[in-house]
Amino acid sequence: MSQPDIKIEGDVDEKKLQEYLKSYNLDQDPRIRGFMESKGFSKREIDANELTLELCDHNDPSCDREPFTEINDHENFTEIVFDVPGIDKEDIIIEFTEGGKKLTFTAQNENRNYHKHIHLPFNSTINNYTIEVNNGMATIRVKRLD
Picture 1: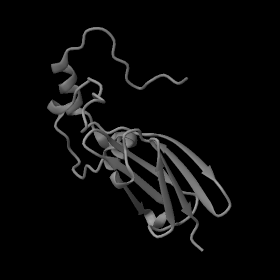
Picture 2 (picture 1 turned 90 degrees about the horizontal axis):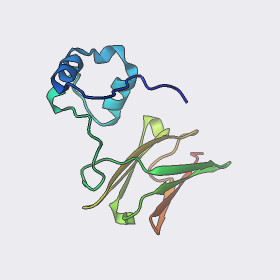
Picture 3 (picture 1 turned 30 degrees about the vertical axis):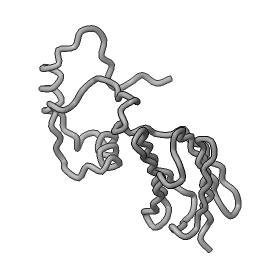
């Protein structure tokens, strides 16, 4: 297992950490830039005073969760299974971007908030998928464009 880029142990001086983060240049780290873009941040700056080391409280409905996912590629379609307990079919939004090569899964209700991007091995459109939700499992079958 690879070592983390940042490891914090012991007592943390939050003011020093905030000062360090204020001076951090996001342009030097493409992983952070990619994360910010995936969360919909369009600004190039963030307020370091709002950053925290605390984990997201999964009982908080505003907390984004990435659902466990299983992807099965077939000849004419890809089947994607999302583990989304507490979610109904009406709570799910599917979007296609990047010419139909990227599927964005969003599921949200008053108790849960799930979000995930899936890169497809082929092009598809919003008209070429089916979805079933049963016992907290959402199964999406995305058909290959002809």
